[in-house]
Amino acid sequence: MAEALLRALLAQTVALSLSAVAVHTLQALVFRRFGAGAGYLCWLLVPVAMVAVALPRSETDALVVRVDVAAVAPSWMAMPAPAASGAGVSVAVALAAAWAAGALVLTFALVRRQSRFDDSISRIGGSAPRLPRGSGPAVLGLLKPRIALPKDFRTAFDREERRLMLLHEAVHLRRRDNL
Image (cartoon, rainbow, N blue to C red):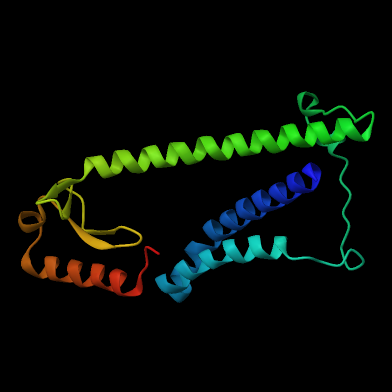
């Protein structure tokens, strides 16, 4: 059971990593040739790859590639071969626990970063978020998105620039891009 969970977590992690690298690599080309909408659409590759890895598949149709990991891995990564089936399970449980601990640490780090960002944004009258001077307008919020303006919005941009920026951000709101 623990070994199957570890394999599933590893497969999902590899799918996430490789698809994110693929998107990052493809985006510049796609942006230039097909525009920004197509470039952002590339991010659909990530959930598609993760779902594809999770789907059940026939073992008879599988392409098997064997890699001698011991031959290419550094010596400090070598894992002792399990003496009995119980030893293999304990290694799998330890690796799954290490993965879960890393995921938990990352979650706390991201929550802390978001909290610091939220604290850096001042609010006028408790409602409209105001961004630091020198930044541009942005859509903030996932469930209740709204346009946040920099503190110097009225003075840093002329009337036409402000109009175009607000129209641009309104498109993000209408398309629910944050979601």
